Image: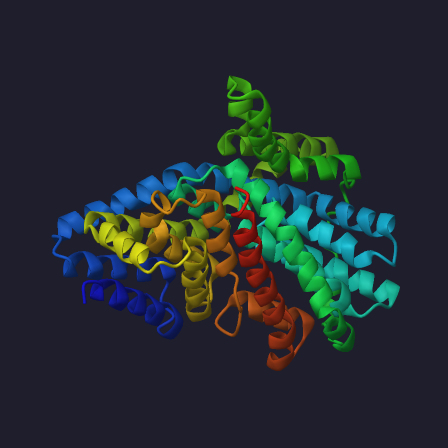
Length: 434
């Protein structure tokens, strides 16, 4: 019973979040207090560990996530996301419309938080389905699979970014490996579910067909839209690739630093998607302010997970847990995925699932012999497993598409399960070469 505090603590977290419906951050704080006191720490030591965990976790992430929210807001409000969608659909044509929307979801999903990308892109999908007369699910699910993969696997999204920080993984390599693993997962979901997608006929509310772009400002061209949306990928991922060929260089290292890359991307968005489209700096500042306020809840959840991680360290549970997990003889990749998947199924939130699993897996990272970047992806893949009725994304999908719970389980939940399992398989295969 050496780990009774962990078992009871995790159980307490699940009950508080899913049954009591208590705020997630408060739930993390209560669990930290319980585990710390049970393991013999004084109140002041517990509080000190919580403060240290929050500071260490958010210190490096606030900049990245804050800039990410700003970038996503500018891409959405300027109409760049709409421009990318419409252009790709036109270029790929009716025959390849699924691929066009998968690419759209991937590109737009990188700078945007999942819920923002969903709300922006789904109405566009409704309009495209109405004009082409193709089954709505046939074109919607592949795009949403792309959004899910970017949300679960790729920095600068909150959970992958925070997990990479906890594991000490390289952001650029995580991004590159995430694309290698994620793209096949998206295509697998597309091919596996094609038959079902054509048979299901949702009837969404007409109100979701409305466009909310400001008619006073021109929409940026496709070149600018794509360039700004993909700039973080180019800088962070490109820096890692350049280091492989040219080694460390001050400029390459600087531009590849996630904080600097996101700052450069936001500055580019302010000018090309804001000033160049006719918006004044006061309007742009208002957009940026609203974007930052939208991530407050996410930051608190990440802070709570960081405090739990620090409690594990302060009580030396991390060391004992690492030894115990090592003794299981299970692949660390599979173990990370299983823990995250179980947390996801239990608690609903992919962010909470991924970060809690990372807190448990962290002691193994340095001694497992597995790439930290692959462990990030395995944890992220597990965190999007089998979304169901305790996940807000499940209900967002259900209500927008006006489906029954059974239909949502057969479509949304199945899609999330496929991309999660294929993500695990992809990471296990990639581990043979990395």
